[in-house]
Amino acid sequence: MTKLLTDYLGMDVASMTTNDWLGVFFSVAVFIGMVYVYVMVFRPANKEKFESQSGMALDDEDHINAGDKR
Image (cartoon, rainbow, N blue to C red):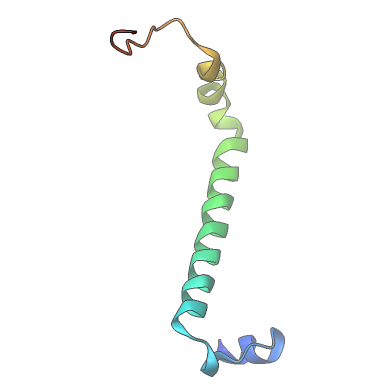
């Protein structure tokens, strides 16, 4: 694995700090999370579930009681 990182990507793994490794970890985690969300959203089997909630952001029939107005 380190041969791939050093030869192909040109990374100096030995000189990477903790912040560098955290950045790599979080970047890969966000990438995997976004791929999961895209697969979940664009999967035809989930279309009915998402279509039933398509107007949720614009639904204002339920009044929110914010207390007494002064």
